[in-house]
Image 1: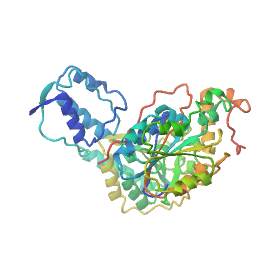
Image 2: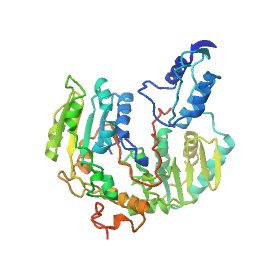
Image 3: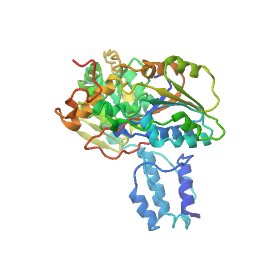
Image 4: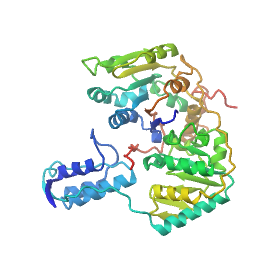
Length: 174
Length: 298
């Protein structure tokens, strides 16, 4: 993190959906700061309507919605390909645009670094909402190992996670 | 005393406590306050007492003012709300500081581990001064990421039990003088309870500290850190030269490899706030999430 940057997260007890409401609070108390939200599609669907309040109050943040089509954290624990880890396939940019009749939000969908760079290269006036399309199992090693530890606590060492293909695998495990 | 509606008085006090915007409510039920207000017994005292407790402890609360009494007029104090900490108990504070100094003096490999309270109680900068003065490596828990400057050579990373790099685990788990600040042992921040904190570690909290098996109540964090900075000024800085372990995060695959874990970080080099959240693990012992709000620090 760059010096002087404030990072707000809420990993405790997996408070899914927290970040969007929290972001509204952060925008409200620190309107002069540049603020960015990184939120997963699953979390976003729980508290998405808070964007309406941000738009109503003229707040102008960048919001990056990481769309990996479901509960990727859960896929590291159990049910890598299970439908219960999928979520509704929203049209996120259309949803956000529907929150204002005046079209004050710039929305886009990116799938590559180049597309993301193109968005960031252009000065923006209002809220910027970017849907970032990711692979369904795209995860960091830390996340994968944390998921595997959670499965051991949940089910014990011989639980359903021991079936090959039931979790996103740790490709560097020895 | 002056006459004022109960609801107006509550709003006045919240404003004097630094609250500028109310969108709704968050946090836990504070049944004590609710009951007090329901029977309309001394609501002015209760509003003041409980708002002060919320401010001092930096914890979320839920206040409910029943609609059938909110408009009733009561006598309220005219004086503005005073939000200030009582001074620490001097004997306990000096004993506690002296014990910590002794431990630091003897220590070969001290370390600091910060949780969110370091930020909530506004001691991040002070802890930085202490760490530089004594040359102590610092780690944060996931919830406190960014509380200690990440460009500091003293930062050794984010600790979360088995989810941490090996070198980082060694720094924290084998430290002969580990000082934690507001450490809360919960599921994801402890790497699903795979953390291994030595039982002789020193625990600093907002209003108390645990040192060598003794619990020191009424010892406030800001004063404690200030006194530690003063008292350790003559200590010989430690030889600890711990290098930051390589990041454990690596992108596996995906259409835009490096984008999330690398690209965002390089693109934004100015001040901003960031919020993330994660999916809830399906754990048998999982309890209802308690939203941690950040109160203004003094």
